[in-house]
Image 1 (tube, rainbow, N blue to C red):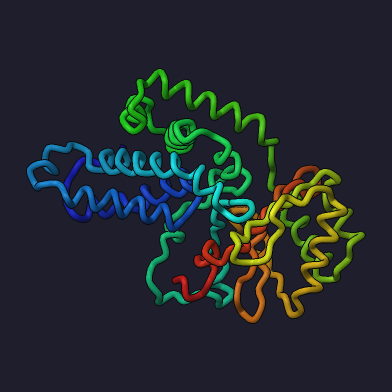
Image 2 (cartoon, rainbow, N blue to C red; image 1 turned 90 degrees about the horizontal axis):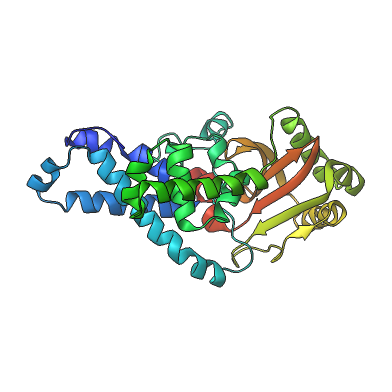
Length: 306
């Protein structure tokens, strides 16, 4: 894990990788940033002689970051129990889209979200499945299957044998296999675009036609923004709910934007992002909608966030 060397540049160069690891483990940009900062603080807290004894600072930092994330995941269940309504991972923007649209300030400070690689391993559907794993399963699976770290090194993070870590990853892999149907990009953009058009027209019939009859919508308001406290189930109920939201928010502007690397929608009012919606699409129909409304999770979507 990482590169040999102890120069300041080499140590700083590990930051991007660590942020990517921590976000996938925690599902939160803010928590990922805190975990990485904590790992760096521990590195710089070492004596110079101790630093020089470490052959791979990158490996050391990844191990420490992984352990910090493991501790946070262990306490997450209690935090989720106190959370108002459903908890969803923090959505990530594709900054290039906002830059082209004039929605981001390129002169502002760097945002940790900008350092996260947008690929299948950060798709909302994938992150939601990761939430169903035990902390140890999640760490073993993400480090091995996503980042290709060997089980011998993952063992140092989890404090278990390589064989035990292999078993944890296999267990996590079964969860992913059961929960995720094969997805393709074909038609996904078109479906989301048609959902946007029907939503803007407040056309319940058209929305129902685009939603799988067994579709589920989960909203995360965190008690800070209005949102259904329980998942809304069924295409008809979801369509009615979406139109009711539009009726209550005159002037709502819908934008097609990439959300965690896949087509999604952003609802903006008065220039402020109110909702970021991610979709799972199968056979031309929307099967899942994840709508994040908690403003604390939308900071990366604000122009001032850069």
